[in-house]
Image (cartoon, rainbow, N blue to C red; front, side):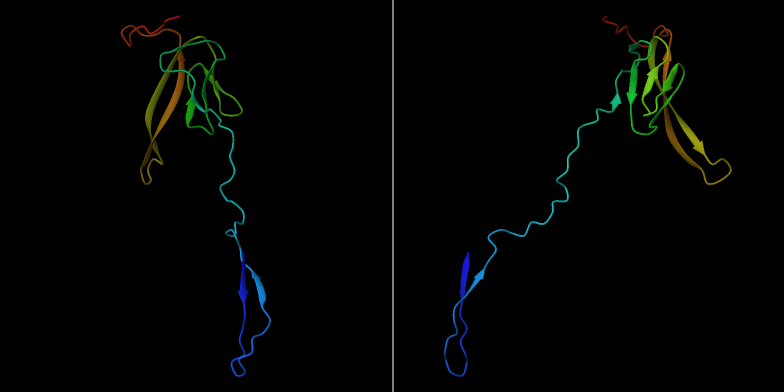
Length: 129
């Protein structure tokens, strides 16, 4: 788009030559700050509580230690928790007290365990396999 600009000399009333001014047809964009995307990582629990697991099955994928390995499990280099034996996955949580003798602070810690047998009456039999 062009705009015609003329300026008049106030004392003589003469007009100076017409000057073309280029106007922006679009807003100045700059760089987009949120234009990046990344592939989904599919982190989280891969097996459920009391679900049958086999040796070296992936139980949890995570970033950092949100969930800690417990009995019959081990953690890989990328914090993935695997089953060390065949059995049933069991999730346990407990309240942890930090800084004994100082200002008390508490937090929950979760462990993933693999038990050999399911205790009787703990949950109805969900094995469909």
